[in-house]
Amino acid sequence: MPSFRFRLPHLRFTRGWRHLAVAISAVLITAGLAAPAQAVPVQGHTPWSVLLCKFRGLSTEQRPASWFADFLINRGTGGVADYLADQSRGRLDLRGSAVRGWYTMSRSLAESGSISRWQRIQDCVAAAAAGGYTVPSGHRVVAIINGQVDSGAAGGRVLLDPGAWNVGFAAHEMLHGYALGHSFSDDTTYRNASWSAPGEYDDPWDQMSAMNIFAFATARFGTSAVGLNGYFRDKLGWLDARRTVVVGADGVTDRTVRLTALEDGAAAGPQVLRIPFDPGDLQKAYTVEFRRKTGWSAGIPTNQVLIHEIKNGTPYLLRTPGTRTPVQSLDRNGIRVRVLSTGTTDALVSVSTPMPTRCLTGYVWREARAGDQVCVTPATRTQVRADNAVATSRWVVGPYGPHTCVQGYVWREAFPGDDVCVTGSQRTQAAVDNAAAPTRRNPARFAYGPNACKPGYVWREADASDVVCVPGSTRTQTRADNAAAAARWVVGPYGPHTCRPGYVWREAFVGDDVCVYGWIRTQAAADNVAAGSRTLVQ
Image (cartoon, rainbow, N blue to C red; front, side):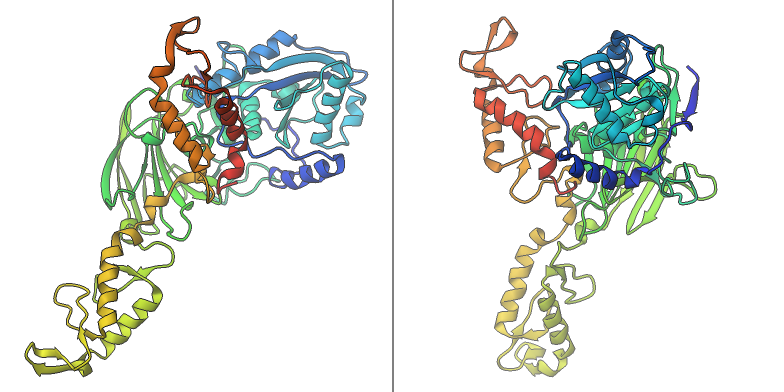
């Protein structure tokens, strides 16, 4: 299939994406509507209402409802639903979605040119309601309009005019509906449009840089989407936690890792390296991933290792100045990365990090001598330095040699041979600090990525990819239900995993057939909805 860089210059984005949230919030307040909740991570059933709407005075119905169903919500058609199922590894589906219309809106095409995108969508929603269809609670919305005026996302809803009826554009906007932002590069000389930020849309290996992606022609629905980068898959909860290596978390500073391509969901091995570099902000990190020219990523030029820097919850592709090719080595913030080889199915990468030796926030190296990296409070280090400075004044020749301590002092013994004389309480403190050292260092142990939970919550862990944040008691219940799963299954009308009477499938994610009490399934659904409000990264 031919590949090409996908751009749609005709679409009007007059406000600029980075200003859209402010504009939409104002509209929501004026309209008396609540802004949609954060949607990540996303798993389970996420139905959409696809509304087909005509402008007053423009009767053209370019496509039947069945075409839009195949384009957006039906599986097995090569449309957006297939893309989302592939990227989520089957954890998400669009079951319960509906296509309705065509409805006639109250405004003409000309009149629509002077209103906001949100209001255009609202016009379509209102036309559907007048025609007998009210968008159900919990449904996201795609408004299809029959005249070319504007396309994009607003307030978690999507507007598609005839110029945007292709998988690449629609998938991008629907992913905005799941709370993803745009991807960037670190090349500040790149401007996709006059209104876009430097580097915005400059990661063509990632779907959130549409309309500037490596795409191909689909069989039925125009230009394709491309795969998501590792950070966005992680944020959506679509990356198996066992396949992310948090470099340094195990205390190892230098390692070589063989990465499997993000596109190869069934293959074994790690797919993403997460490399935190700032002990004071564990969301600051580099990611390393291997992308393979296959599937939805068939349009990329070649198999490629990509390195991103994560800043403020946004991935920035690192490019080589001048050539703009993706960097294949990194030496920043104490982190060193080298791509050793790139093959047909995997890539070999070496990485080193100082994080295992760094202190947790609130602690500093003691530095009782050069290389003393025991983590202590700043007050303790100040005392250590003061004791070192007066060491000679506390030594006398005595029974323990020339470094016998004067009366009232003892050797500190912070390390073997440490004969600096200190008070007894300070020697005790040194022993306590030595014993506590493992618990006070290596912040990488706590680098949980974009789905790190707020205090009071933990990952549910219904399976290895379940990073929905829940109270600790819910995770305990989840583990108990998982352990009892086999005892609650019988062969029945739903196969060998039919639930015994009194139980239902939990359905924390698509395919979750652990049998639980009904109230637990209800709780799992509620936790999925609340997930985004419980993460540190919003």
